[in-house]
Image (tube, rainbow, N blue to C red):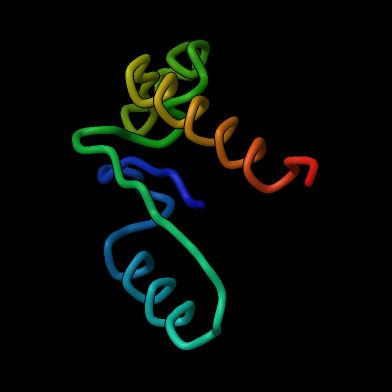
Amino acid sequence: HVFMGDLDYVCPPADRAAFETGMKGKGTSWRMTIYGNVKHSYTNPDCTILADPNLAYDAAAATHSWQAMAELFRDVFAQP
């Protein structure tokens, strides 16, 4: 599962599309969650000390992505 903001300069829309194209037909399960109006480093509350306009903490996206990842781990590593 990939989580990212739609304003993440590290992975622009063309790169996201290339990733999606590359994953199709591989026979694997995958998901991409894109948070609207969210920049790079959205899970790091201290990223603003760098004074980089491309970085911004987003509490809602950080919380949601953490919960979704924890759920994924529970599913993947569940005992039979």
